[in-house]
Image (cartoon, rainbow, N blue to C red):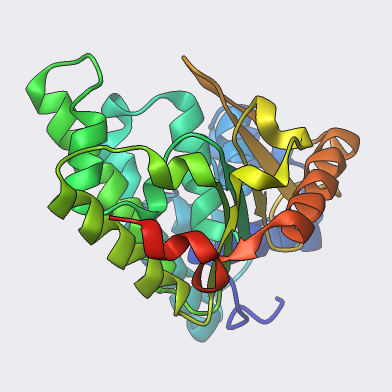
Length: 283
């Protein structure tokens, strides 16, 4: 067995360990499925991290792979329990679109998140009052709106992880858009400056005077995942935000590279929030 005390989210470590255990035992995924009377898709999805694995199923897998060392078994069971605890969004799947579920899963493991936003303060940076003002404008039942607000606020917790890096580039229009009364906007601006002071968060502005640029057609986010997270060589994904729905690019290295290069160009144009002359004109 490989070292399961290494770094990384529990779900990533667990799925890598299970795949390593299976291949070391000389089994194919089909052979495991047949032996345990499971569907092939169940084995595949467990190893991909797309679904959780129960303690009972994990014990069955370990027994089939011939893993009986008490310390190794206990460590893997602990990973399974931690994985279940960390995937908080699974209890809200009925309230989330498939694209949002995929985004949250990527956010959960991403080591670097870069976002360009051209229309509104990014959801991850919004105060609770702004989150409420924005989401309350969406069509939907009040219970759905309240649940969506809670989910967005919960997603913001990843900003507290100083082992990750967050880079935000905002068009000046995102800061000029009035989303509520002056006190609401003042609180939002204070939050942006407070977040920008964190060592793992960078917020920059592209002033109106900068002219045109490649990203003017829409906002997007690049999420860089750990090596080995995906089953291919692509270690990043791109979320493209549309007016009605969002889409995610995976397993297309060329297209993803285009967005990364465009972001690098934006960084050359952008000015750090605390250095931006327009900061003194905010409400």
